[in-house]
Length: 213
Image 1: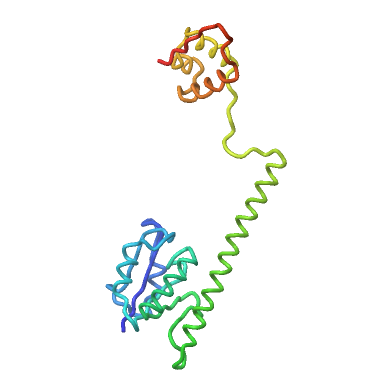
Image 2: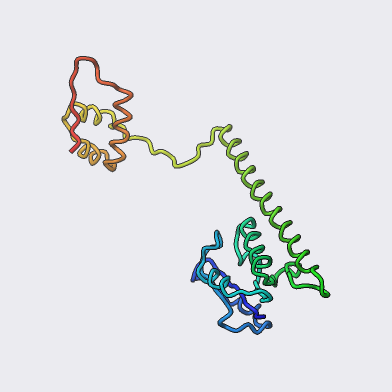
């Protein structure tokens, strides 16, 4: 039986000292403390995967808080089951006494309570995510109903845009020269120019040539 600890921060700029300080009373060997400087969006993390390979039945994994394990409670439940059921190790979460799978008074009370608490936390995390998404959707719908525009504000086209487009159509001006004249990027001008030509089709019997160079 050995004690292990898992520490995680999202970037190397973040400090792990607070997590390490919380682990000091447990005298965990340095070689048994695994640390990832990576997002908790999934479990494809090198230190975490290395730790899983070392964990054995009867070992104890200590975490400062359950969100150090991961961010998604659905995935946390899968990892929790893998560690406690498949591997047979225990988990202790320091920030929440109830998340302690170690047997209490020689029975399975610890595992039962920890599993139940984690299931409840996962449920509330999921419902909160759904509630946030619903509020966002309702807010966007209400704002659109009031005529609010979402996305980048489209800058108005220069006053001489149409006359420049006419010159391009007659081949008197290249699209690149037109873009420079209007102080626009070639990509932006050409996109608006194409839209203009669609709104102003060539009259039957007239031949125009756009110079693209």
